[in-house]
Image (cartoon, rainbow, N blue to C red; front, side, top):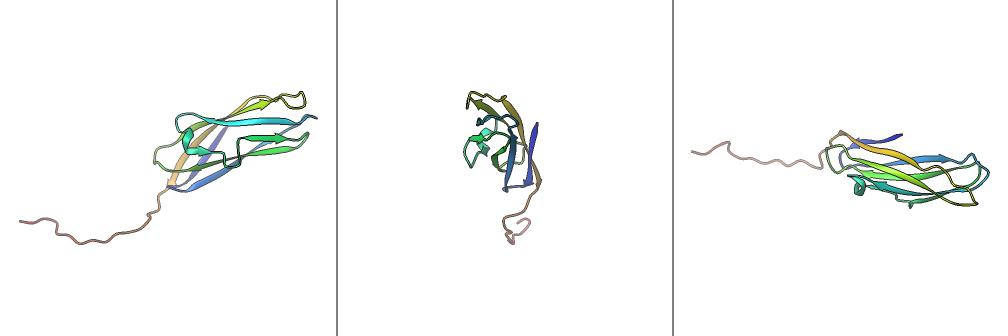
Length: 116
């Protein structure tokens, strides 16, 4: 699965990954971000999620577009044993794309094109 962070240059994009628990036991996951651009992605609400039986939980991933090149990382969700139940390890590909560039300001200046 892939999660795409597309937006304007220097914008911050927040995505939520929904995790469902169909079992009758609580599941716990620890989230880690790995890869070339892992430092540019963050987990603002923490990297641990507990999902009650037959409910759903969310992991929030945040990204600020700092470079024009696409950023890439992997979100790794590792299950922790809880109530004797262990879930499957899951991975998500995190990718970014710059959709537009907004100027922060404009500067006007006058200068001769050349001097003799």
